[in-house]
Image 1 (cartoon, helix red, strand yellow):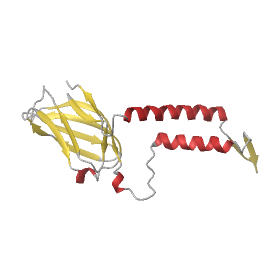
Image 2 (image 1 turned 180 degrees about the vertical axis):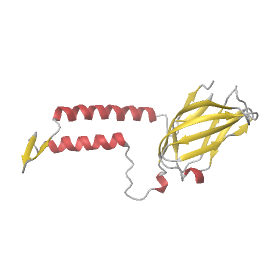
Image 3 (image 1 turned 30 degrees about the vertical axis):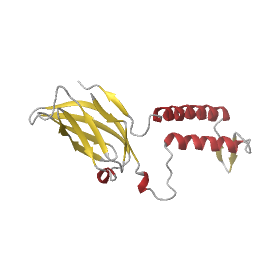
Image 4 (image 1 turned 120 degrees about the horizontal axis):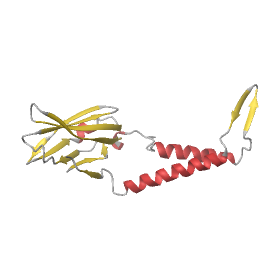
Length: 175
């Protein structure tokens, strides 16, 4: 079994312990490769027969936020095997952000924009108009409401997933 969290906070200490019965430490070492907005490679430290990945907050503060693909590879010095893969989100280091930082994610930004358009619709009745051979067509209100409902549902699902707390882990069976 292994624990690689689905979110990692930049500026926070990172620890993940992975147990690989087929590739036990210290005979085997693991390397965690993360690729996305940045390049991050972490070598495991043997803890009994398990493997621990660690990075101090002074290191993670420099990790570029964004979505990363990861793989874990095991090696005994000559043989190399891939034992896991997945995706992880590295979040912004909130302590390093300046005043005026917009912490909203994509879903929240789009939902806010859709709701602003719907609110402004109350004062604008035209579906389309033309001025000097240039035309503008507005998205029908029914489509905006449908999009708003879709993004509200997506935002509610994200909130539900996060109720377990930041850095929540998912258990993955590695064979």
